[in-house]
Image (cartoon, rainbow, N blue to C red; front, top):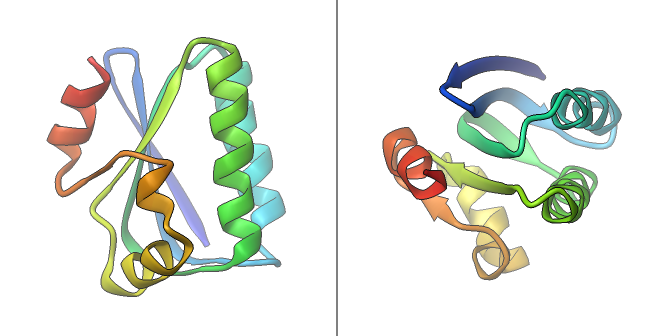
Length: 111
C-alpha cells in the first residue's frame, strides 16, 4: 500500500493506493497517528486508488475517529473506489463517517 500526503491549509489529505489489509494496517496506523500526533485535527482520506480494505483497516479508521474526537478534530472520506464502497456499505461505515464524492466537498465539509 502507498500513502501520499497533501495539505490544504490545516487539512491533511491522505491518498491511499493498493490494499489496506492485515499486512499493511500497522504501517497505516503508525503513519496516520503520526500525522495526528503532529497536531493535525482535520483529515481527509482519499480512497480513489485503494483496491481493498479489510476489517483490520476499518479498525484503524475507528481508532483514528476516537483519537480525533478527543482532540476536537474530524476525519472524512472521499472518492471511494467501487470495491471499497461495497465493503463500506456492508460494514455500514456511512453511518459513522461522512463520505463525499470529491476532495473539494470533503475539504469544504471540514472548514
